[in-house]
Image (tube, rainbow, N blue to C red):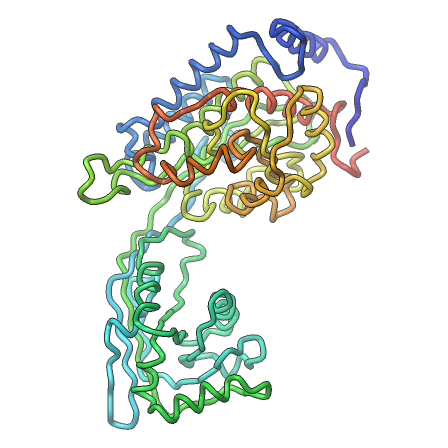
Length: 500
């Protein structure tokens, strides 16, 4: 619960007086505001950090590259200059928390169906197989046609067999995941035609980065309806498809055997989350977490014939890291605070929130002691005075306090429905799913009118450069977070529900 007006000691009284003095300098004394001179100084520091992180020298900050090493070194150095200590809580790996990753790109595939002595290899435009391992081979495995079934198929009927399932847009991924839990030799999803195979190749054929702990083998294949009709016989295939629509359908063992082989170019490497800490003054009072992803798409993300192929990611997310570092400096100057404040730069967000997920799997502090987490991502888009997009609104106990600070600061809440679209697309989701109160407050996400031109323009393109940066809204966001984090880090101003 929020506790307002509690009696404070001299240390907090001085910090609060300083905060109010800053507000008074801005004219009107609004909460979370500073003088124009101070805003200019903040803007200069933000622009300096963004210009470094988004420079060609950092090569687009792709994990596993020299650009990563330069990025991690820069963030670590800035944390040390700000007066932080290592937040890994691991003497053997100060500042850097290793994240083991696998980068995999499909290389070759083969699907062969054998009926008696007759063998038929499916054409490349009619079939494709994929693995994240260097090579995966299943030879002459028995075949089970499961149609559109998944949960109702007995595990003992699945294990070791090649499953043939009928594709169903929007449903197939979940069905495959369920079937893979019972360890089939491979799953072949039957899709409509060669155009569908082309779409599969575009989706599955790209390079993927994943956590090493999740890069297990799962031989996934696709084939067209026409190819299945050819190798199984048109009459037999049509009979199977029709049977699959029957409410009493049960999986059918087929007379054929199938060989599936896939290879990939696979690289295993270690990337790093960067973790610093502002130690709190009150032991065992919980922690506050600031986070933002440092990674982007690298030096070869544009068209092969383009003059500039580096995706520098000035907005996404050099700007978020810059705001987080500046906020850290300001919080350090106001401290010490009651609670520990951890500052986390995550890797591989662009590949599926991997760094944040790795942090959640092996946190330096128990997740249930994190009182609030605040993510900074793609912040440099909106003008000063823009409404605030509240990502995670209604999903944490932080709402009353955050909305109270916004009200006292004269900040307007943006389009809540629009902001809600991005809850699963940012690092806070990896924490929110583990019960951590994680939110993202950003003027960039306050309205579709503000964000949409960026998403349809420079987002994940080489055009995301320093000259596109807009810092007015980002500075507003920084000052708003300064007040919110100060409160959450103060045991007399904020306690989580049930901790009274």
